[in-house]
Length: 405
Image (cartoon, rainbow, N blue to C red; front, side):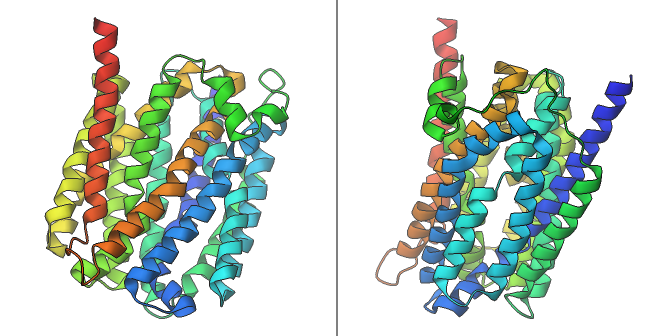
């Protein structure tokens, strides 16, 4: 009974930590177009290209160092890895706030990418304190907490961005600092000697991790779906601020409002709705349902020309958020307790591979199809995301057909 109570308190702690940490991420998105244009100059299309490169540099570091951080958390514990990550992120936001060259922004993003262990370690933490039946639902709560913090951050960023595009970065640094202090006093350690795993260099890199874990059933297929899903979903953080400014003429405040609406909807879906859907449908059908709603949402955004309609359609698009927790939950049920940190690092690396290439592709599509000499389709990136949803559905359905024959 005492262990159950301790686990519940630990779960609450990590949810609050994710909430506060995601505020720092959401707070900077509405002002990135203005900041890049202020530092680099050029038009909105060029700003989108540089924004894509910044996201890619961050993702490349996550890919290279994600499994190492997951392995370190399996060896030394979730708590120290998480707290050091938060400290580096707080410093990173300050550097970005003062940056006056594009290269300093790149350096800041590279350092942050190396230290960005927050979500990976938090996911391993949740796996530590969840039963097999609870994992998918609890990963949904993790997404809800992160989404809610993103909502708050996006709104703060939109408001502060109206006054100064650099102000949100200093606010994000303050939020990360508060999160660090909070975590230091309340975050317990969940790695015990019973599940502690030695740190191995050969498994502490993304390639070694893939080789070590690929033998597990269904992991390869689910990682492939996760890759394409993440590649498609990154169209929102990488192009949304540029897309809505180009198509609807939105200000940073309106961008923040739209992200707030989207984040609230995702939080409701992953925090409440998914706890009803997964027991009814099971993880495989829940994944397919989410992919279907994502497909509808992406197609809608390609053709929609009304900013009001985009806001009103947000809850439908957000229903697609049931897919990712179900994917992660299925994978987490496949590995042992000793491998949870490594698995989450592997998932982070898979996402990072998508995040390396997706921003480049998505922002390039936005750049090309907003040039006056080309066909004007500012939502071209969403068309690609719709196609990727079809690929994901096909992969899952082919797997089912093979098993049934």
